[in-house]
Length: 395
Image (tube, rainbow, N blue to C red; front, side, top):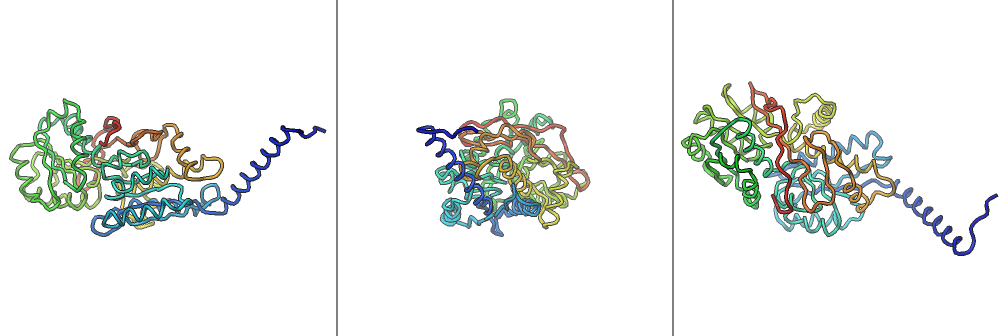
């Protein structure tokens, strides 16, 4: 029979046994509790992005119904950022101060990144955002957008017009929302010279601007393609005014928010040349992941949109990371596991996902153009268009 160690070795042996027992006891105790995940989003009716966090919630519901993650349920706490920096900061404080919240998943809003990025970094709390908008979302060590965002989307849209549609004169109208102009300016500056040379006119427009006058000016300049960066409600207004004046032989290019059934139904000219930049795999795809996403969204009454795709894939990523972890799931252990994950193929993304320890993140820089054909969106180009990697500065 093997004898037990004695002396100093015995002390170390006993200490190791006690630590292992304590760890096992802690793991058993944690297994009885749900894994708590949060989100800060714009949920209001006016300028809300509720589909992203709602899609994340539905994905977590499906995981819980199937037994959870390693036997543990996911508890999702989705908070509204409100309409002021004060309400946005208060929502974040509630999640940051809760040690049981191991990560934020599926958030989408206008104020969250500018107001809370520093607080998330200080607390070591990672936010896997379903749809990021503000430039600060792409300049934070602890915010990881799952979408292109409007800035990389603009870069890819202009590159598509010049390199794929072969347009020598491209006009751009940028919806000038608070805090976004600098991000757009930097993205335009990142365009390679051969693409930038084709930009004929770039205009920044307030949401209540006269769209009809802006379109008349673009038409007078004889632009070969017109890029508009608005979200869905302004895209619908823009299209309404453009169709009154005649779409003509121009290619009208929009970003991801235009890739919806509502926009497709709003186009009446059968010869219209309208395009949108899909930042995730188009939902016409028959892949198993896409079919599952459609099923979950339809059963939940959620729209098929890039916002719901972003929320879904951010939740999917969170679950994948946690399932690969050993030991307790904490804020620190999740962050470490995410950073150590090698480049990984994810559903819907046109490039492998990788976060690492970068000071700023844009793991999804690819867009797949879709074109309107007889009331439906069809894939317009066989390859993903990929914007160059970000520097450490805001895009």
